[in-house]
Length: 269
Length: 144
Image (cartoon, rainbow over all chains, first blue to last red):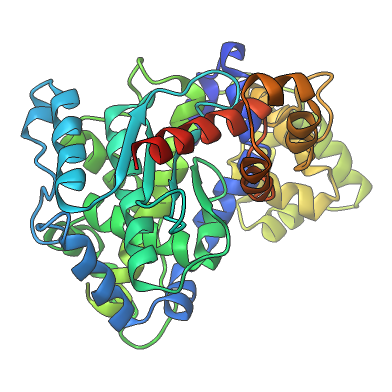
């Protein structure tokens, strides 16, 4: 899969690749890391339950059924209206600023979104920005990630940095950061609701029953890619996604699948 | 059958300089001797994992070996020409040092302090990104 994408690369996308300063190391780290210890270290079962409870204040069906996001329109060819509904779900239930605009050009596309917490003075409500220049599924994923930051700001101690950025790089570093990991947990629960997660990752759950490390076999990758194609209509072989971005998306797919598998294996979530 | 490349002669030369037989090298790499023979003959392209093992075992530069094996990867791992190494502070220096731009966008000292914190996150690579973030926050503040 990676080889196919590499083979299709063209020099026209070279600017976008600056964000991938060391892609082989980045992908290898995500592929080789055992996610369970990081999850245990930063988020225990109670914390995960709090995260899910809080996130359900916005997405009531999160982790409950196959399509927590109403995705019927997506596969029928109207992804933008689905995105609008998702945005409305967020603004209807939380008093926040939500901005969704395309940000392209140098350094722009590398940015998927960001979250700014309220400071109690000039910014009275949190701000979520989502870069809508990406594929609709990536836009939705970014929204879930940023909502995860909102959730983290509500249930954990405030962070020192005023802005949390979401880039399609360095996913491994998210495993050492409570805010980023919480944000990714919300995204991974949206991407793989419990019934589906058990179907795809259930066998892995059993391997950890005796406390062994969680293995994530390569054979799962085609299933994950197929999952995105079947449920969300996004294909890494699609011609309309530039080749460099396919590699970014692939890194994200592996990261969120491994995180979802770890959630199931560690906490049965 | 894969297209012939320069990987094979390099692996063969390095293996011989280590005085290893194809079978011995194969054992160290965890593959069959025939696979080593195919690689040396330019008839197989090793996986990324195997490229790394070959580099480790034969003391070759991983980056060079990767590029020889997967020339198409050069777009991913090559540094753009004339681009200096990424300096996390560079965007901030450009941004805060551009008096005309600060004046044009009426950036206040308080905003500069916030943006300084943002730049310290190390991933905001251009002054343009800083301006974009600033304008997004300004819009939100104006709505409050």
